[in-house]
Each structure stands twice: as C-alpha cells, then as structure tokens.
Image (cartoon, rainbow, N blue to C red):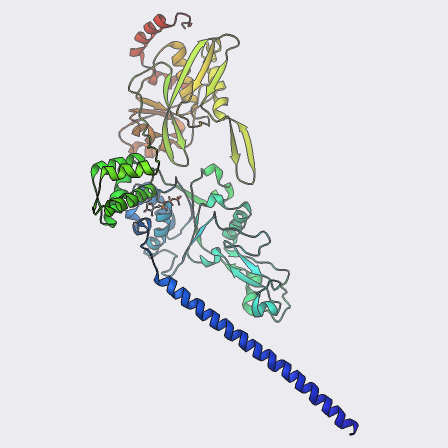
Length: 555
Ligand SMILES: Nc1ncnc2c1ncn2[C@@H]1O[C@H](COP(=O)(O)OP(=O)(O)OP(=O)(O)O)[C@@H](O)[C@H]1O
C-alpha cells in the first residue's frame, strides 16, 4: 500500500468519525427538540384545562365603576382629573386619598374618556399600563426592572441566539409599554428612590436610555434596531397618573413639581350607602335601610362596603334569601371584628377652656379636634404641659429624612409669649393643653385654638360651642395660613359647627360656594377673640368658678 492510499484511508476514517459526530449531534438536537415539543404540548394541554376552570368574579370586580359617573362622591377630584388628562394638552397627575375611595377606579376610566375628545393627543389604540409600585421590584445591577426596562446582556444563561452572538438585548419596561398612552403607578409613594430618579429622567427625556458594557457601535453583528435603541433611546412618551395614600409632603418634591396634584376624599355614610346599594343589586340582593345603616356606621370606604355586602349576601343566599337583613350585617360586623366609624360632633354647650380645633388626617380627611385646656396657679416658673401630640415628627423623603421636635409643642410656646405681651399673665399659671381622642396631633395649625383656649381658661370666659377654628399664631398675634383649609372647613360643617374661623390668607374664592357654615377669615388673634368668646356665658361661668375654685387667681 503506497503512502497516498494510507492518507486517503486516514482521511476517510476521520471523515466518517466527524460525519458520525455531527450526525449524532443533529440527532440529539432533533430528539431534544422533539422532547421539548412533547413536553410543551403536555403543558399547553394543562394550561388549556386550567383556563377552562373559572370561579365567579369577586364582587369587587363586578361592581368596579365602568364610567366616571359611577365613581361616587369624588366630583371635585374627578373634575380636576378630567381637566388634566382629557384636555388637548394632558398633564402628569398624582392622586392623593385614603385607601378604597375610587382612585384606581377613576384612573382606569379616564383615558377612555380622554380618547373621546377630538383634540386629545391620545389615539384610539393608546395603551393604559398599570404597575403597582409595592411589587415593582428591581435589580440594582439593572438586570431586571419592570418599570424602566433593562438590558439582557449576553453573559446570562438563556440569552438565546443573540446572546450567543454576543449581542446585548434591551427589554422594554412599563414606561415604554405606555408610550403614547397612560402609565398608572399605584402606590407611587412606595417606589424605591432609585426607581423614582430613573422615572424622573424618563419624564424629562420622554425616552429611556440604555447602557451595556457589551454594546459597541462598531459591532457589525448587532442588528440595526438595537443600534437605534442604544444610540437614540427607546421612546417612552406617556402621561403619568400616580396614586398614593401618603401625604403630599412624603412624596419627593421633584416628582410633585412635574405633576398636577389631585385629592380624593373619604366617603361619607350616605355615599357609602350608594356604593353598597349598587353592589348588592349587581348580585341580585336587596338590602334594607336598617342593614344599610349598620353597614355605613362601620365601612370606612367603598372597598370595605363592597366586601361587607359580599359576605352578607353569601349568608343570606345560603339561607335561601335574596334580602340582606340587619342581623346579616351585624353578623358581618361581629365576625370581622370591625370597629365603628366615629362621626365626631361638636359638644352642644359653651365651656371654659374647650375649643374646637381642626385637623387633617392623611391626605384629605378632615377632623374636628376638641382641645381642652386647664390653667392652675403656678407652683414654680409656670409649667407648660401638652399631651396627646406627636413628640417629634419626621419630614422629608425616603432618601433624606429630618427629625424635629413637634411643631405643636413649639407653637404653644409662641402662644404663651403672645398672651403675656397682650397683658394676659399666662406665666403666672401652670398650663395644661390636652388633645384627647388618641390622634397624634402635629403641626402649628392648632396655635390659634390653643391661644383662645388658654385665654378662655385664664379669663374664665367660655368659648362658643358652635365655632371651630384653625390657624398658626405668630409671636406678634398674626393668624398665619395653614394647609388643608377646605378639608378642615368641610370637617367643621360635618361636625355641626355653624362658624369656622380661618386665616385670611387662606380664604379662596371657592369658600364663597360652601354653604351651611359661615366662613370667617381673620388676620389677628384679637379679631378672632372678639368672635369666639361667649360673653353671655361668662358671668355664669365666673360665678361658678369662684364657688368651686377659690384658689385660682382671677384676672
Ligand atoms: N368612590 C367610589 N365610588 C364607587 N365605587 C367605589 C368608590 N370607591 C371605592 N369603590 C369600590 O371599591 C373598589 C376599590 O376601589 P379603588 O381600588 O378604586 O380604591 P383606591 O382608592 O384605588 O384604593 P387603594 O389606594 O387601596 O388602591 C372599587 O372597585 C369599587 O367597587
């Protein structure tokens, strides 16, 4: 055998070995593919079977408002939402409000309403993308970010054909999915500060810019669309609607300044009843007045009302009835351990050292705040005790927080100095100011009420029972503006006050439209004093006082 034949045989041998190797590889690949296909077919079968099973939709879904008119009691908020989203130039929006009062419901409907306006930049197919900030977790390395999107680098397993070719692949996030439409972020106040900063950048640029160490402009393997995305960004031009149960001060100022701020309020019992009646009719149940009255004294919001109806109707239907009775509802209250909704009302009699202050709880819920003050002749230096307030408060955003001494405490020191300067010897007394009711009060807006209360206690003149008041007080006796004045006026009216004293600087044209309560703007403490002291009651009070407390000093 010559050398050539040997080489040919060796070549043939290696040819056969290599051929067998690739044939085997191909066979394995085919077998693998077949197995995957078979496996996938089995899983698809299971999925199809799962899809056929469906329980009835929860009542909360069946009664979800489908148009804005179905959202009860939020007329002011909805008007503002319409103005900001349905115009020819829609704005970003943040909706503040307590839980379960229709924020999400209204946000879900508003885009459809905007599309009906011929001048709206939203198109018929503009998307509505929803994201819950409490679950939108992200990876600090940018591997996965449901809000902004991320880059799938070729180092990751399962990067597919592109990954094997060393190509980084941008993955769209909610901001790009919402391009041309609305991005609704529920609980926007819970967004991680890094995500919030990235969102601000997207709002500014109206596109998302991606980076990857694996991207190179020179890489000819990278497809054109990926070059485009890395070089020009991925479009993300949308209008943001954020919803939050937090207070405006807790939301980063940078996002607030880019958004129109809208407030949804707590529903009152009559509105809760409307939500509940609609919910029961959706499930073909009747509900009587007495059952409704139990429901509305416990349900604090629309969601709670719907849930209570759902449970009560299950009980009645189990007994073969279509009528939800009072005892069904009482059973729901009892078994769910619900505590009654307290409706604060003013005390019906003028008293010394008792003043109706006003507070805002949460972003848009007002409360009447009975403040009680007692003065006793001082033992030493004139002690000031203040109870029922927050001892210190935290201000700022998640990224930067500052703790400071309670402003209510600081404000009472201003009050006693002011009273001394007006010739009222507050320093000759130990003063105790109490905010009963278990709500930790804070902020300077009770200053006016405290000053009136201390004056009343020292001079033994009762404060009119049907007047409520709010305002910060300066050392020179000016009544300074405060926040949430409209919410406070409504709370005063609901509690039965006939007059409400507010700082003049807070008076707005809208106040003229509020009926059922006199709104009196003041600029000074003295002005307020002349309006709220019950001089009629004072003679009786002074006489009583001398009988009961001979040791207290008369001034
Ligand atoms: N003002 C309302 N009018 C009619 N139905 C309401 C209203 N508020 C709440 N509901 C009912 O309660 C359900 C929950 O309301 P929704 O999710 O809109 O509240 P939310 O304010 O967004 O609360 P959260 O802050 O907890 O998300 C709605 O689907 C609806 O059935």
